[in-house]
Image (cartoon, rainbow over all chains, first blue to last red; front, side, top):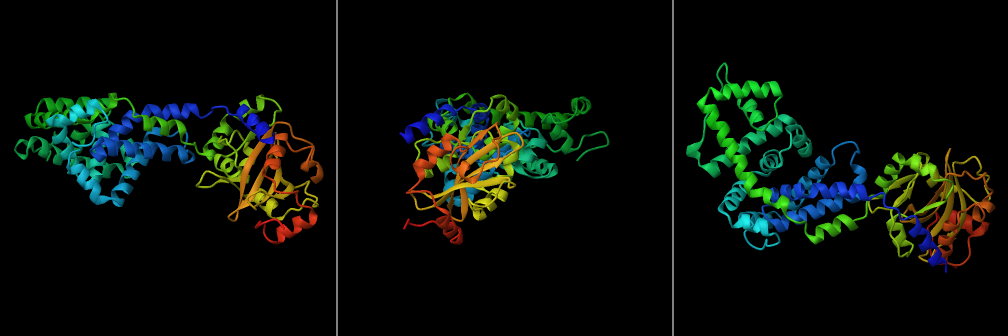
Length: 186
Length: 261
């Protein structure tokens, strides 16, 4: 009897003040997946990373300062989780990226189609060849289109550090994708 | 790298990335238009961005995998965040009248063996110093509440205390538990906490905008305690509530619980 009455009371107060925040996070997921894909180089790992990020963000939502940007905070979590997971399984991660994510990632037709395209493999391999710090800078600014300030905040580095990582990443990527011969000296 | 009139590499990259002010964008665009090398550099960088876009943007249009949607919908939100969010909707809370409201942190609900998992509901500002959030999502008593739970006896004159302890009992897990009441300026809150691993883990809270007259310990044990808390205590309790001797004994043992004698 007691249990029933308690359950009824609790049902009656199960309002959903939480839905708007879940909705806000849902709106960020496509961008987060793209960011994760550019870090990990394959869809399966990207989705694992995003899943981990979402779970962590919800459980630690109190660490997000309301009024600051939710996207920056979540990108930062994703970035940190990625680095943590890389440290934990560096060898495995390396193998996954080096294969260009061409096998085993069949969850998404569009991405699979892109994967079959030479652009995907070439670009992915070029990006994967960058040191992590440059890859993150490229992913945030050149792929996600974040401002320098937001990207620096996500990575927790000064803006000058971000722009120099970005410049080095740009050079290395362009050299790999277009060839060193086409390099433009300015 | 740059002549007198030539933008630095840094400025040029910022131009390509659209990070300059409107005036600067216009100025650099004019310089680029006059210099073939700069044009070639800008074109190459645009081509790079196009490449990256073509490779990585298709995923934006993809449906989210089910597992990700489930994670988004089912992961429990930080109880502390909901607490803080409650501060912002405090006025709405106050406008809802003097109804007792129950909230059970999900971790505590599991500990209580309840088949529910709702997160903590609204709480007034005055209650925040009484609780902190544990990493596992549980709410832990702190400050004056923790002190009261450790030290107060039901027979003490605790009317001046911001946190007053009511009934003490042992739960079915062998833990010592105590009900408590907190008085805020505009709200009052009652709850129950159990001593777990050196902390007082708050199992449930019920808040009201009605501040009851300061109750005697005995009244707190019954009449002034919201029915929802009383119901929970009835579910949790193993045997009878502590009498004053058992209460003193439990305090002397630092509320370590154990099997009931």
